[in-house]
Image 1: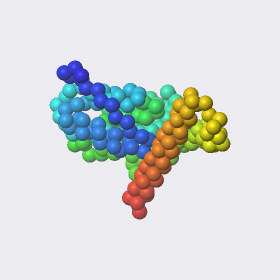
Image 2 (image 1 turned 30 degrees about the vertical axis):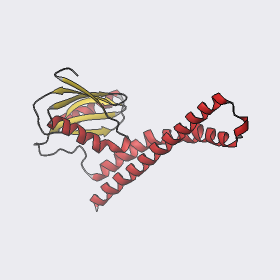
Image 3 (image 1 turned 180 degrees about the horizontal axis):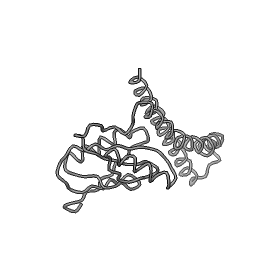
Image 4 (image 1 turned 180 degrees about the vertical axis):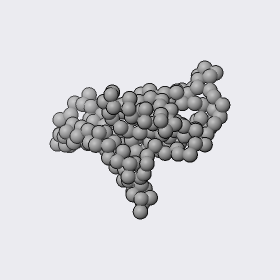
Length: 188
């Protein structure tokens, strides 16, 4: 860390975008303005005067032509565009302004959840079902006596990946369901 810059590692999963927004807001309140994030979750900040700034994240994959119009629309409503990372767009605006939501209603939030699910979760499920799960099934058919010592390491890695996938999938499904329920409850 230099005197005026700070880097922190944080890992937010797909349904944790509200926690990420709150994290960025708290950092700004503490005098650290978000500048950008790089993979695998390195957040970059620069020193600033503490202020209450709202950060919002949107998932709206678009072509370059449509992206310019999309950003311009947000800027017209007072949002400062910060960056895109993995098709997630980062915006900020003062909390003192009247409207600090980027979505017009909760149905729009649910629609964003569907876009994330379709574009991000379905590929994870396909990889899991086509690559990880068949390997687990094949390993379960092997007899313990037929395994060479170095294969134990490979088996351990496959089971670790299996566990990680189960954890990620479960967290995302539960998170998406919780958010969809939350937004649906606010509609009624």
